[in-house]
Amino acid sequence: MKKFIVTVNGNRYEVEVEEVTVSVPAAQAATAAPEAGTIPKDSDAAAKAGNAAGSQTSGLPKTEGAYRLAVPMPGTILDIRVRAGQEVRKGQVVAILEAMKMENEILAPKDGIVAGIYVSKNQQVNTGDIIMTLD
Image 1 (cartoon, rainbow, N blue to C red):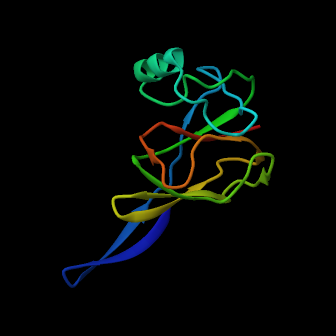
Image 2: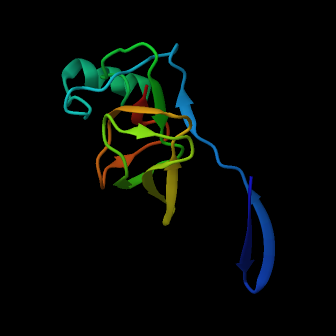
């Protein structure tokens, strides 16, 4: 939990905010990074599967053991601070998401190596869309 002091209409409030990440367990549907590190373009099967699943994870190739880092809320990706193959540490900022006119840091939930990045700068994303996978 992080504590913040917020002033609203001249009144000061102390608030506690819990930082959370949304992830899809590997057992549910594991993914790997395509060679170029991007999501495959809309093929008919991938588009239908993506629409049915409600996220952009369906068209991704399958890999065992990859951790999927998902977007916690809808918004726009402003920056990606890592690249495929880079080692990351738990708590490291990996991306910046603009949501509700605020810049939100997306943090690595665990130590690992970036297996693939599935978003690009200025891309609109929805809750649950996969930002990247970690091995």
